Picture (cartoon, rainbow over the protein chains, first blue to last red):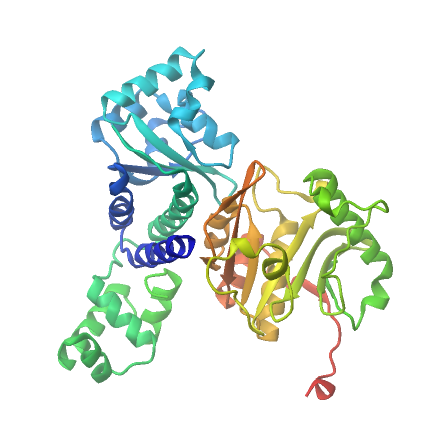
Length: 241
Length: 211
């Protein structure tokens, strides 16, 4: 069982590493958590008190959350009364939102936020607190109106959260023009392994001409003069490994 | 000032500093973190892995110890294989290029400020990477709270879990390997804002004798 959990987690990490956009990262997460009933994912760096709504939105890293809820949440400044945010900034352990109920029983504003979230089909959630290199708190949440989470999945989701968030952050640092198609990423991965165009064409079952064409497209996308630089860039940005 | 690497070859010259190291280990792991199994009446935390093959990395400011960590070769018994094998669901990572990072600690005054990676922590990590790149070591085994995982990823370590995080008291613990290369060192140095080597002193190894 534990070996299988590990293997599944390792395949998930590989899939996240291949994701070319924050949205693709979200997609990968949702495909894993859907069997438990989770349909939404949200992750971001926790804004400091006093930050404007716009600055708060800029801190969002992954967003597959009901759009109307996010608009309401940020424009109403819910963030600073949200009990899940309070917990993220004070604890390192993942938690179910239902485990926080005792902590906000006395706070009408916190209770209102959680009740309203339920109306937007975010009644059941699970959050993983994180800590960035800069020392900022960050949170990763999955939610839906109804879901369940076997206790032994918490650790797996904690790993899933960290890798997803790390990948999304590094994608955010990347120049937006550099987005490779999955096929281009494959080609570049094989170039990085030292394979010739002919070898790559055999591996991927395409013509040698197409491999050469894709290699040139990749160079253009990175704005570099040669394949080595493209590989270096791609490694730096973890497009390939 | 900087990191001093202490092995069987040069431990004789570091008697006083090693004394501080064993006491800092006891203060941090037993008194602060409550690892009571390690408690010793003399206030010096020393275990079965502190033998001739362990490598101690001491962060010294003058004669004063600021931080400490210990590296153990994966080819011999180490914490993951001997003490915490339940954290490893697959095969144990073993090889001359893999060492285990243990007993990382920094004095209270030099800890993370506002939860940022402290300069002392950065210097100790940088020393591992510098030492690894020079000696053909490319991967370290770590048992840690999963909260640090994101930070390592952001520092350009390629972190691979060896198991699923498990509860240990009120905290979680996970075993990982963290692979590094020259980019990791560049990243650590740019975060620190200092391009100078972290390692100040290391044992002189007579390579002719080794060969």
